[in-house]
Image 1 (cartoon, helix red, strand yellow):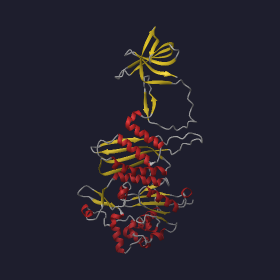
Image 2 (image 1 turned 90 degrees about the vertical axis):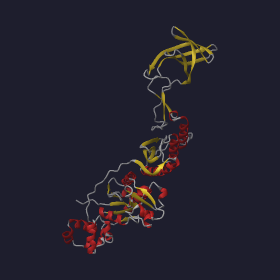
Image 3 (image 1 turned 90 degrees about the horizontal axis):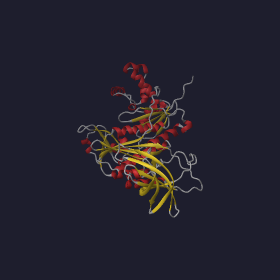
Image 4 (image 1 turned 135 degrees about the vertical axis):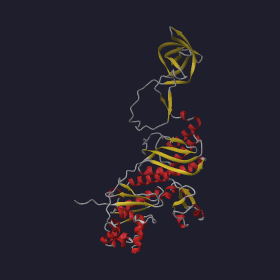
Length: 504
């Protein structure tokens, strides 16, 4: 039986603690930055960007040594932001293949994608690798990508070319030639074995591959056999895929507490941009955005914004979030924030040729947000009846666009329309045999010709707003012959009569 062909693409992003912080801090990408870890005064540099390395920054430096370098920005390491960035990159790699293995450590992000059989979807391996690298860069991370038919060969080449941040495709059978010039540092080799090879004068993978296997095993054990196979591109590998989840979430820990809304929106802008990029790659739009603000005093402030239609318009989301936070400001300074989005369909509404033009959804959402800020959250939306017979028994819900088009919706039966009076108008009623006979309404006297009722409704005895009503439907004529179809209520607790609605 013929063994199926193997093909792997390795994504290697070095200095990952620094890249995870800078991907959401666009204003710092062009400045020399170092990331410190540890508790004061035992802090040390764990990662830095290229500009800081050119100035002399290196891992292990103390804050005193960093102070000697000009204009270096010092950032505190953020594990939550690194985990979010790592999950985002694994999700990105999962768009090209369901088989993704995570090989990351504390300071480097590494994942290997099994791309065997993907040519019909993404083209040649070189095209796939180029597209994968572009997607990673769009997420704010600089990385290198190497493609090979051997798992460990792709890993070693991507690590060796991590400074170039480009794409390398190794042809089948050409692994030994490509690996021969690489230094031993591309292997996960211990300091003891590195010192031994240095004493032997072995500095490249090509030199290691030429050593006789029996003699190498007799001197350093089975580790020597494994290192020799790695150097020759012959090391087999049992692929252990992970299952990255599609979660639209971004986190940021602020360097200093923020109180101004403008400063917060600057951070939100970069986070929304990343969420929109991730949603677009899966042909989704953002249906809702939830902002979770961690405040001083170990409290949180959570707000959710949901427009009528899912959208990827960044300016619209910024405006909606701004209006929502202005209407509901946090109670203390903000120390960190997280933004979670719910994906939705990107479908468009298809209008007929002669259909009237509808108002733009984005402008309508902004207008409604402004109105809510003035009149209150519970006073804007659509009225929905409650499961009760109480007068004015309804609530307001946000406007939503139904999933079923108007043409597909079931037709509503024709009903008589009633114009409800708000507020209800008090009237004088004359009874005969406990039934309304005549009444005065708007300075006119009406005589009832047809009386229907009463219908008794009562409830909410446990609340201060106790109610018990009789409802009557009447058809009446005025002295001038004017016809009036109306609805009256009799409050049994207060003893008053009111006109609550007029039938058309």
